[in-house]
Image (cartoon, chains in turn orange, yellow):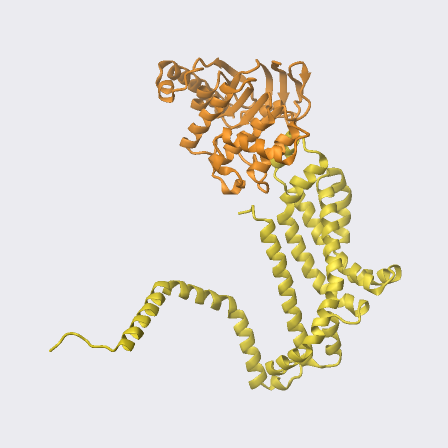
Length: 262
Length: 281
């Protein structure tokens, strides 16, 4: 079942004076890896929350397929930057909890076993039996990704998941997510929020740039780097550099306009 | 002249042993020193208090003041009173344990229920603010009139004293739960019961334990009052009884013993806390 995520004329504000998001119109085809790029305060995390259903837009409509999104659910899993797992449960139990929501009849043993398989998929065979506080930041985020996978959400939302990690771990996890996206049989639609231009261009099939105050779409770029994931080749290619330049310019122009308006 | 020193076999063995001990002390010197300083730091106040007590009893006219019996008198009284004190402990715990545990269970359940519902909070918290400072001793006549036994009224007084801090701290804990945990629970589609039991309760445990520590302290304080009417024996009653009879060595012995029991109880609570909060760094 391939569903299109459609965001129609969405506005959002906490009070009526300063709108956070204005006039967002967007269609995301099924299976696309979309990156949302923007400076801090551009409302990109807010947009993600609206898509997940944790919050409702002030006006406008967000639908998945033909059904309007009215609340959160396992069909729209989120990986946050932090507090992704419950610290009082072991990593396995955290994932087993998610599995129990997808396979309602499964026994404790079955859930545990499947949870361990997901941990293997993200390279966490050493984390079996451990608690989140015993893991490093990179391992915790892997576990959060494993839990999101276990939910089997057709739409996966990621809110700056690698923002708190060091460069090496970030690179590894980016490749992990790309790998999982490409290998999944039922292609997941992924929406990935970041403020890092390189990350946005490297990961996304398509990158959308959000301006700030109010947040609105200022650019919608298809990134033609799909398929080639040799990092050094990608980052050095003229194509990538050119794209990076133009996006950098757009973001700087946006920031300057902001400062001028203040 | 020979450079060799001739030693007997026994001397050789002794020298060897001494060398080993000397080595050991030298290696662990810093550790012993640190340990020693640590112990002195922790005991300093006790050493000062006990020291002043001995001095006061022995050298000052105060030594004749019956209110400050000498440490020796108190030790003798304590030793003699141990059987009575032990029975008193059991009697006190017959009131303390039901009261405190009932307060804990109700405090946590109600605290989580109210703390997770904005509507309930608005209705209940203003009432709690007014009701919680009321000294539980005020309820004594009502408790005696309504409840079938004196012991139950005593338990009720202890219960009230421990309930409010546990309840209010649990509400605070439920309130201060990280937003992300709530988001995660919503996305996972946890039922209300699952959310309360698997997320709010563990997440509020740090606050809950703070409330329990305060509640336990109040319980001990109220125990004294509660036993005046609620029991024929008990630790609070022991201290009060001998104070009334001006048997100060026994009274002070009782005070010291009660202090010790309170200390053990608080330590037990602390131990449970550190095991339950293993996931907190």
